[in-house]
Length: 196
Image 1 (cartoon, rainbow, N blue to C red):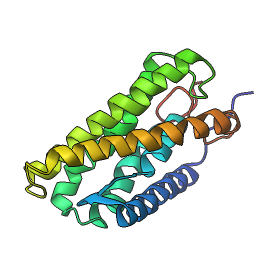
Image 2 (image 1 turned 90 degrees about the vertical axis):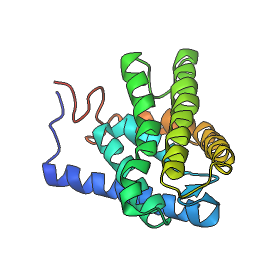
Image 3 (image 1 turned 180 degrees about the vertical axis):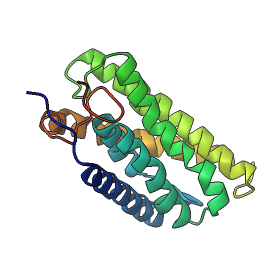
């Protein structure tokens, strides 16, 4: 029997909870491991947001953007006007793996070598390269960092995100996906709800 959609207030509350979790982790990591304005050397949020987006679709995407905007951006010292486009870096870091898993019909529980390869390419390397380039470029174009500092910030951003994405997200996806797939919160194949 197909599951029914969750009531809108429950869905909204859950997405707000994901956003709060992301914002708190982001702020904590920017505080304990700063690399630049709003940038952490070890941004644990990216690993959780990748998993949340693969599990919860648009809810995870929303949480990734606004969690970054609040936690790493506003609370990390990025001016609000810059933060609006700077936080797109986190969107890239979660949308690229989401699109790849959907388009390539890979299993997010990483059951096969092919699934793991899709994750490595799109959930560790390409997404984090895109996020690091976008985020560092936004900081540079906004005069928050110098041109001389930009390459080391981009490399630090990329390397730290690769490390946490590689060490944390696959464990979350492999171990928790079977349980989350059984919940009413799991999106499964669409952006906003279960396919009918």
